Image (tube, rainbow, N blue to C red; front, side, top):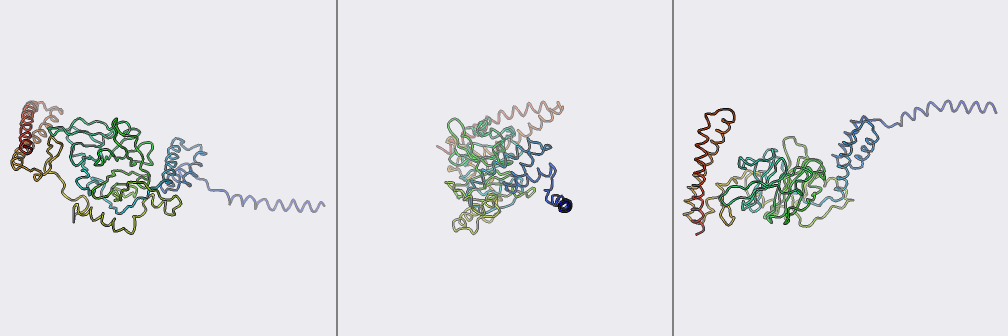
Length: 406
């Protein structure tokens, strides 16, 4: 009996080192707080909700982790989880990678869809965000653009000048800085981008409707339009039947990707059990092969500026002249009456001189502000000249209108 107990004890003693070694082999590797955060963030960018939540749980237990930062990431992952259950079935039929600067010039829009312009086309007295796109509908009666405080709009006055910009309202500008607007031809449906608290990451695309008392509560457009990166400048051309939006989800440095898609009046979501759900949510590839209708759509886009790369067509207006009924003439051929066309030449010449004097006045004011008091007389002279020129331009404009309409 005693020998048996000794044998058992000896056996346990021999087994103990092996058990400890086995435990050492099965211990999970430990990561630093920074490594866990990097892994959680990467899982989010990879659309791997399960892994992201696993890493977030580990960060919750990490006393060194900044829990406010963890909370932000957790909310983003939560929004991704919701969006990935409702990925819209959108036909992405083309894409192009372009320089980030003036990327919007690569959108091929029919005139009826309106115009996209750079901030440089705004009057000098109008402020704008450092990066924005100015939208104006075909008739040119309004402009909408982004400022550091959000979206604003300005109405064209009867003399061709622009009214003081007005914010689009709390619903649009709440929770983030709204930018990159596009208004459908119905004058009601507004698409824009914002980095609000309900965004997935960076700028997200939203849609809202203009009502009598302002805009309705905007709705996040979800996936595949939005991603963990910046997604913006959605435009829909109802004449050609094409939709456009830009994104930096492909991380191309100073380049952005512009996608062309087929808009749909009704939303159809991809089955959540589809094996390619995540791939389509992130737009890993384009719709393939193209149908005959989709190929025809691309041809319609190409016909807007046939033989020219996206955005290279010369769409710069000769001028902008507003008639009392709201129509805006931008080309000499717009005039129906030869007499009005001849009078318009006088107006354009006067407008050119007026603009040159205004720029000269601005330079003198800058010199005066810098301490050059000898610019004072020149400032007074140009101010007086501009007041007189403004009256002359109004008379010329009235002459053009009377000749065209009578």
